[in-house]
Amino acid sequence: MENINDDIEAYLQQVVEEEQNHDHDGSMSSFMEEIGMADKEMFGVCVTSSEGKVRKGGNADEVLPLESVSKALALALALEDVGAEKIFQHVSKEPKGDPFHSIAALEEGDKGVPSNPMINAGAIAVTSMIQGADGEERFIRLRDFIRRLADNPAIDYNHDMYEAEEKDLNRALFYYMRSHGVVSGSEEDSLLPYMKQTSIEMSCVDLARIAAVFANNGKAPGSDEQLIAPDNVHIVLTLMFATGMYQSSGEFAVDVGIPAKSGISGFIMAVVPGRMGVGVIGPALDNSGNSIAGMRILGKLSKRWKLAAFSSH
Image 1 (tube, rainbow, N blue to C red):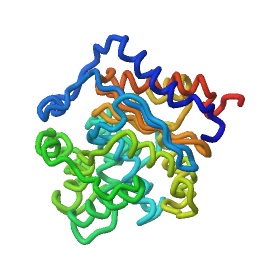
Image 2 (cartoon, rainbow, N blue to C red):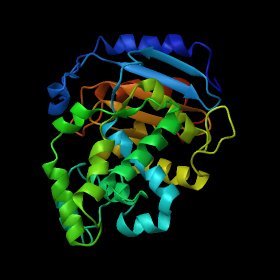
Image 3 (cartoon, rainbow, N blue to C red):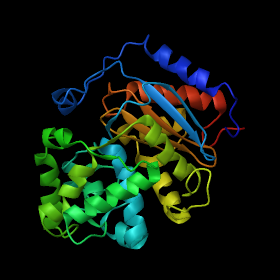
Image 4 (cartoon, rainbow, N blue to C red):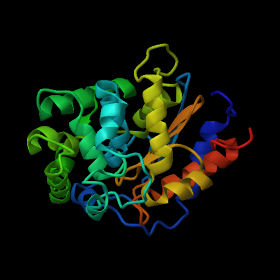
């Protein structure tokens, strides 16, 4: 694995075992409990190099929903479909530290324009721009895109999770933006694809492979197959670095220094450009909605192998 010692798998298992000795007093999303995925002691990590080598530890093969990690993947496809100019006419690029589900942020902003694509309102607007004749086609195109990134044709959304998630707040965000012309169309065509995408489920192994595509400048790990244009990889990684960890994005950038996107299922996808992709799971969340265990594990990996963007190698 490029620039990483051969003992990485032993170390991944070590950090998972260390995590089991920590207290995890954070909350879990209510709908995770409702569908029987409320295990605070589920910890896993997987690393995939830009050449495609895979190393893992703990519960890396357990399958969970992506939740907000999907926002980065939807942004990549929307950039491929319609380009950055159109997307950023409807969504800003600013790391304002808004809570991920904030309505007040839309009211305070410029005519209902979301501050960035990594909060719910911004992601709803982005997903609505994915090409498709209707909402179902938009979702299928996104699902199939994610399958290609993960090299796993079995990936799909969790129907129970989709039914369990609270939808009214996202509906409110959609209709508020539609009243300002930020989004258009019906709820079925422009909102439901977003609400399905958050329920797409996979393992840390799948997620690390997707992250490795971003680390490999948009190419499939170990090959020359271009899955995402390099310019679009740059945009997604920059926004992940600035906004991907919600209100803790600045703190995470200083302490860990890796572009990352979290989800309230406990997933974090992290990317070390040119070197590796990382998938981490730890369902107990801090006040910002980030995995407590995942942030700690990524911090240890970053420190041990000097992964931070501005570290001296």
